[in-house]
Length: 338
Image (cartoon, rainbow, N blue to C red; front, side, top):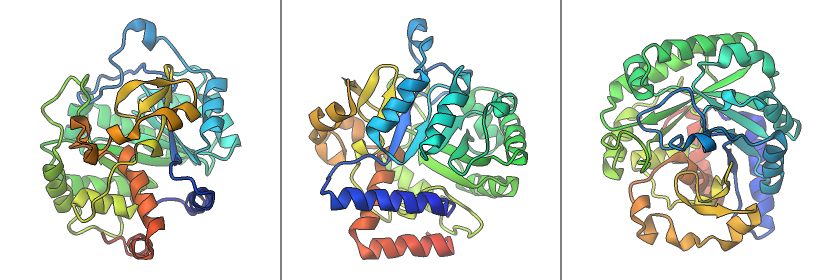
């Protein structure tokens, strides 16, 4: 596994502090969306379908820092939109790093090479490059020929400058397990620190509604993908979450684990659903009716969801709830076997 030791220690201390304080609900990762503009129109994306008046808006550096301070999560994922289109993205990253947040700046990497001078290498900063599988699959997903090659070139440039680089991959219906296994090998050979993988979510606004995975199909696909997991593969995720994707474990969603802040405020209830907005993080946590969400709630929008932002926090909680689960986590990290 590829989660940095410093991050693991920080998150472990944070979780133990929350548990000792008796808090049932607490965030692990702040999903920060400083803008919705993008320079791609991916088929499975439901995040950028807004009128021009909304797409022009940016969160300020102060907005982003305040959200991080208010939330207190040790990890911040900067998403969007394409964050590198934000005129102050370098300043946002610097301020969050100064607060010792572990920052994952998600990007399609089309602008990454020319923007590298806006950042300084740090153990707290990683560029999380969108790579939706092998070349053909990725280019199809992002609706841009040459997108894969451009991302690979940018990854090499960032690594050469001493930056941490990870990848994030969304898996859709029709993905070939063997081709994905070769893709994992390619990413390791490229030199990325780790990979993040998740099934796609069927956003209502996404242009392509035909290629989102149903739960049983997800289990079968990931089980085949990881059936002979290689020690050389480094995933920047909880092993228990990967086992959940394979159908080896069953978790309920933790929607408050990765709260979302964007130009509208604190999004209810999670990164994927938009059921209104709260004016403060406290209002989000205390006034949201969490019983309406998750598979057990019967909410039809939650039945097939297995996305990392809802279930990675569940996997982390499970590891701290059970010595056996913690042992399984440590064993997988050491051996690479799922």
